[in-house]
Image (cartoon, rainbow, N blue to C red):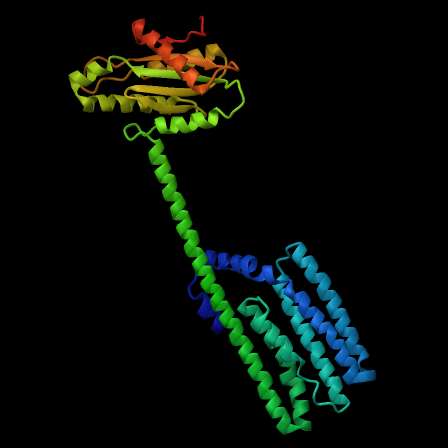
Length: 380
């Protein structure tokens, strides 16, 4: 029966999805309601009163067993909940089956003294499993079978010998209760499965939405021609950088393709686009991993480097600038690049001011004949 019902719930399911379902069942369905077991323990313990009233002087073994099981269950459930034991459902099943044995033990003692009306305690246990418990279907089925089996094998035959007609009716009530509780547990499993499927759809949609949002963000921050960052990205970066403590300790490098307008006029915009892409590719592949590269506008690029030794920065920028001398796609003279550098290592330096200083250094490089690096802070 376990296999039959289980196959209806998990037919041809991927192992990873089954594992995810188990985690969902444990974290969203089972553990949030596990504390209801304490109420069941209290009710189970209260039946010591009826044990005393019905069994009288024969009640002591049953009462002792109830108290022992209730105390052990309370301690074990507390530890299992506090320390997140993975065996908590198995523990609950074991407690139910143990409670079933005690109930049947009480019924057997009642039979020994001629009482045939104290053998129905298992019905309450099964009703709890079918209604309040949040055990998975497999565990619920195991617990119900473990509770009802001693009744079928031992209690029912003894009762049938004493009062056949009465026990026949009682037997049908017990079996019907077990069946209804099994069906109730199965329905709960189906409802849980539906909740899981809905949560997975929401999760899948959330992942897709997050990925789509990230793609939109990347598109809004990426230059379509060169595939490097654009001014929108720079504005976001500036906003975060301005929150950082001063000094910034960053080197700002403005680079511009020399005589680019002439190239565009002479060779066409397609050739100009190819040159811009080549320069961007060279800069992107040679910049430090922790550097930022932005297409500042037109044929102008902004490179932001972590500040270090001024001489090292000057050498690094000049090396990059020379690498950017790319061949003209139409076979004309190589295209050269000019650069202006400013190191923001003072407390009063802002990002916008540093970019402006680097831009001024670039214009100085242009005015001094182009194809060179100007770094006012470097006297080498």
